[in-house]
Length: 384
Image (cartoon, rainbow, N blue to C red; front, side):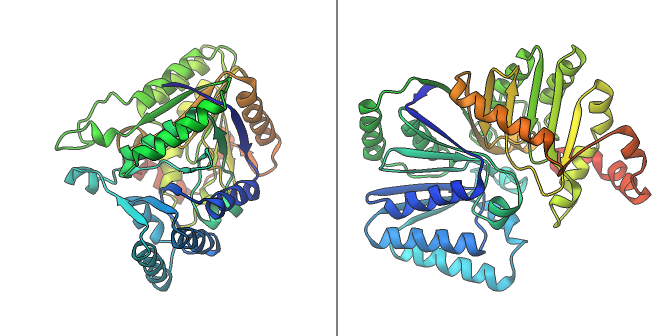
């Protein structure tokens, strides 16, 4: 949908986003909503949870919406003691009156196939919202590249309302309060807000056999198809659903300079399966002329820049799960105040020594065991 912002603050610097997130929680006096894929019980998770608990105890209506599958997946990175401690803190939040939701989609098959939400929104009664690519984890704030946007204006109540589509209980009076603030601060930054939760549109078999449409994926395809000169994409691991992959290949084949920045195999120590799912398509991309880069410390931002004139940023990873299993959200704009920061990020990534260019020659030097894993498991890309 079309909306506007009165203010747009890019948050590429990790500590700048963290400080802004914490300040919003600590300064909240009436309500605070936060949605996450998962929260880790590390220094960042503990500090955020403590701030949320303090807010609830001073009578702020706190609502935390965490994806059930994402939290279970992230729990693999935690010790048993940390998982128990996290559960205890969440219990304390609930006991204090906070609404803590572990979102699980309605269908049994959806839950079995890792359906859920991947949207990261934070908003308070002060009239500002943060839409981010990252979660509350050390990985997001000290290791991987992430990109967030702090916005004010008419877009803020729109972001809050979408929380109701990922398991949140959005209070109408809170939406009205944010709308009143936006009316007093008319904005001229034109934005498109793209949101889709495919779980709400599927039948008993969930993602199995589902053909869409996913309106967010459709917008992404339209954006890629509109490119004439250049197309820059960042994603955690680049393994898009086939319709979107075909659009990227079309762009490269018609002469668009396409570049993709995503993560190296070593960026996710817990498993290499996500990288394998991406690596299975490397030959197709390189043959089409796509410039492909791997970031050793991890690229977790989700940015698309078309012809240096149009940018979209948010939570949508280029992967099958973003199309048929996970709710996702993106903000898009042609306004220079949105496009210029994204363009600067891409320019920086191109020069970053942590980004290694993938070539056919480099692929030929992969160890035999890596080639075997890609050949064996790459065919299951949709589920990795």
